[in-house]
Image 1: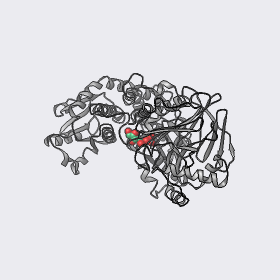
Image 2: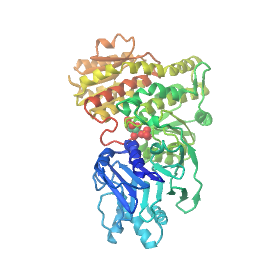
Image 3: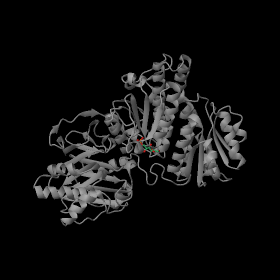
Image 4: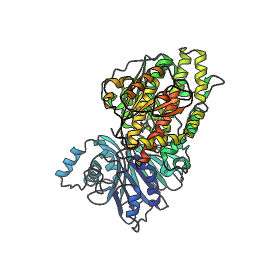
Length: 611
Ligand code: F6R
């Protein structure tokens, strides 16, 4: 939710800031703006994408060695030129960008209005900025001190970057609840919501923590807490290359990321799974094994696609480990008064590691003394850092807004985790354990085989692109994949789609079925196969159009479905990792056929850092 970039150093700031914003556009793309410091403040901002701003300011004075930039996902106030960041203070001397929500902005606005402040935008950001300026003027203090005083009164989440016209080489930054990375170069510093804006300049970064404030100059990085005590910056080495965040010849990041899955799943298994030796090495699980073995219950918290991974993990862990699992939407869990007992483990799943609801759900659970295990893709992200232990999915940067490769990475990690715990607990036979290890090892190759037939899904997508609704049905391990298929289709093609357990369909959704409704069945060969065949018949009897994802060699379903897509034979626990691939491709090709900007569909943002 909103991307922020900053630079101070000897180079021209604008090209660095604008390129950084393009890389962070996945976080929001309602409006864009930059503030540059050189002989005073220059602010350029505009509703729309980074490219729109770039075009609008051709020929303007963009020369500066210090600058900040913002790409917005609107919260307070509709997307417009006026609501775009950066905002400038009443005096015109300060400029600020913000990612997050200031919850008590209405109260602060009331106080400032009484003092005569007039606001030009509807944003909480402009309120906070003027609140800071008001403190600076009244207390006769410097900007750093004013920010510190202001933030003590603020509730909500923020990363802010501020420029002061009187200090042309300084950026003041602070964070609580939204991500902030500072890149350390030679005589220069970079700031970003993630490390992508600084990748070609430095691999040395500092992850700023909550309630920390940074004073950033070309040759100086001072980190302090809100109590004005200095903190030694902890410099980490980035393990990421520029090529990983570029499209690499694909038309869209989403397509690139779908096609990367053989290698991302392989990377996730590499160094952990050795089927021949019969071992799974996962240090995060090993160091928490006693907790897992003795767990009374595992509570999974996540949002969106990550929630679907959690749901599948419930089926797998209960089957293999015989540990009760509950799956919770983080946004619900955080506001309930959940019962968390000694011996419960919280497993938090998140691609970004920054989802606000998941982060707070973890904090609530920690207050109850729960052990937190994080399954996260972004290395060094907030969830990774506040968890007691965890496992990375190693899918690499995921830039397309719709989650694809991170989801299969989550499934791979969760399956390994279940197998490791089951082996340790003795709840799985040697033979099944060994078979599943070999099955897992074969997944990358089977995903490659599916991807070779991608064109077949394009044909199906073109046939049904005109539909206004779609139903996705699955049973057992494939039910979470039906939910995920429906989510992917609606976000990427704007077609209304529902995911349901195939048998539950009779209790309501069957009323939607007519000769126009596409019904996608995830019907791979598993212990539910005969049952789902009956469900297909029920849809066909009502003239619904059946698209079936089935296992190679299935000679029953092709005779009844309108369209079929084959996936390789796999154990029923492993099969969802395969059947999710055609779901991704079907939505991608449908979105493309409908002219949707699939990497940046409307209203969405990659990293949901507001609740
Ligand atoms: C859907 C999608 C979202 C995310 C959700 C959670 O394609 O990407 O539903 O899964 O916003 O995000 P993370 O996993 O970053 O916590």
